[in-house]
Image (tube, rainbow over all chains, first blue to last red; front, side):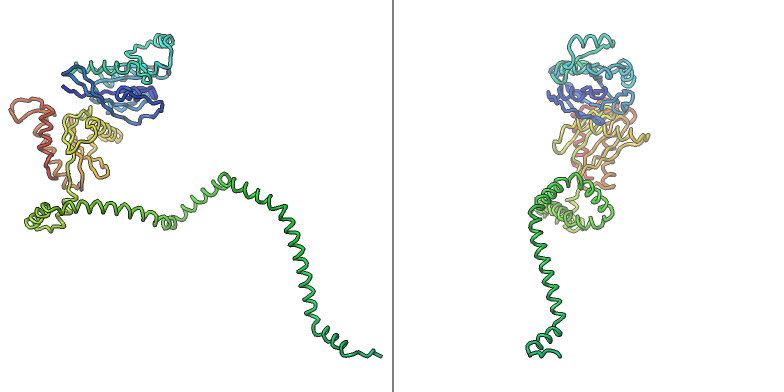
Length: 165
Length: 287
């Protein structure tokens, strides 16, 4: 059975939201940074099991430094959320817990995955220190550039959504 | 006593008296010619030395035009265009005219192809019959057919999430689920941006197409239309949409449900059923 689900991908400017989606949908990466204006919508069908398929409608929202300012209309009817931050840029995760509280308040009772992107830019020790020092509980550490953990992230979300009605 | 003059001397004296002015003039001309000759000689000598310097100066001047005179020329042109709009229009009009002419010619060619198509044997007899029955002349019927409003695509979309519930399309276009999402995003943005309560985005115009959007409580119906979309067509289309919606969406709960099998039971209608009904309602609809 094919079910369609709306996934919202959000986070600060330039954290790699569009690149993550592009890596997942088309398995490509580009160094050219193009700012997303408004929202960009793409789709990928994920087969969970022979009789359970999810059509993921991915809403790539424009980046913002003020998560509270995201248009509520874009978040209505969301089935799953991916919150992305840039592991190499502290300004994108300094207020992570506050940002997550805002997101949860705007979209309550919705699966939410926290993703630290651009792990290709930091070494393993530095990464551990950053996460511990900033008390960050992260669900996935990804690199849209190398493709590390990108499919795992969306597969995980698809599995969570497949169990929903 | 004056010395005696012979005839020759007398003639000379007479010549002097008579041609005194001409003589002076001749001397002045000779002097001027002499000055001119001198100047020319000196100029030739001078030009040999000066010409290379002047040529170099001219070359340098040419090279510096873009940086020195460019901004001045641009500013002057801008000012001149601003002050002489009519003249500019006059100058550009012939060029634009040619472009417009080319475009119109292309459109007429397309129209002519469509008319040729309309002139097919069967169509011609059908039209003759319609003309006889309706009393409208054949040319009028032909033009009416060419500009006929047609439903190209219908999308039944969940209002909040933008998830596509069902669709009907005459020909396959791009991914309908993505189109549904994008339409929802545009609709949400416009309604949010203008911050008008109870106001809905109703129409999007896209070159030769119109996208009519009919909003309900939890769903909306987007209909892509080609041709001449006028108020009469809009009314006809709304009637069809309302009929469809009343049959398959419970107005109180706005849930998709089946009424055909059993009026008393509310069973969610599946995608296949909805698409079949969309085809039935919109497939051959005349608007």
